[in-house]
Image (cartoon, rainbow, N blue to C red; front, side):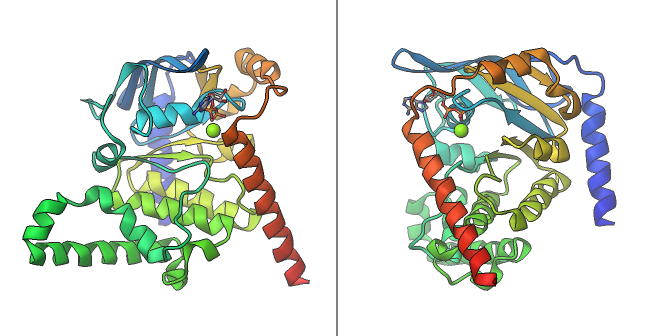
Length: 311
Ligand SMILES: Nc1ncnc2c1ncn2[C@@H]1O[C@H](COP(=O)(O)OP(=O)(O)O)[C@@H](O)[C@H]1O
Ligand SMILES: [Mg+2]
């Protein structure tokens, strides 16, 4: 039954893409997100310069592109974590430029981070409750109406526990987030994002640094989001995973959207091949990239230790 529904969702999503032109910026039949002319510069570097792109409601759309293409920066603009130099975008038809991150989340558009932001000195449950922050009303009102406040707190804890069970983290609810493995932290971050009952979930490299044992489980959870009616936009490097779970692929290079198409054909698109071959691998690493590499090295060590421990 579970598999049947997934299949139906997938069929519906694929049908929406069937007759679309494989062109950057192609309009979608029912877009949840529409982006126009978003530009973000860092000094002389134009990190993002997206002319037009749309994300189809109910789909799993992958955002791929070589390192430094501007994917994370683009996510930051859209979700209010950074301010675009210019441009506009609508989520569910509502203009979102200049809307701060917590309000973006409250309106139903949440993102997770390439480097997990789980707070290590808080427990798993506390992290989840923090995820609901965006959902809460004004602190001012809550202070005035304690009974209402308590009611909402109960509801939040209940939802947190429900999600922790779904993500198989319930046994860890009182452990510090810092004690979780890299993969469990990714699961916690995804679960936490769902506290606001989002319509659009944006995942920045959800599989990065996750050891293979947890990869399938994470992929399953991403598919589940679509099954529950959410739209997913995710950044991923591994093309096997992209092929496995996405209905549509958007390719960025040097800040622009340079190609779009179904996953099984996109990697043979000459624009995509050129973008990957032409990517500068000799450029100095940014702080983010350095941090990412450190993070990956740490994960590898942890995975190795776990392997060792099993012997
Ligand atoms: N805060 C920042 N300050 C200066 N340059 C940045 C900053 N964030 C990102 N960049 C640069 O913008 C470009 C795009 O980076 P990013 O969005 O992280 O790419 P991706 O996520 O596709 O790997 C890179 O050249 C990166 O070094
Ligand atoms: Mg990135």
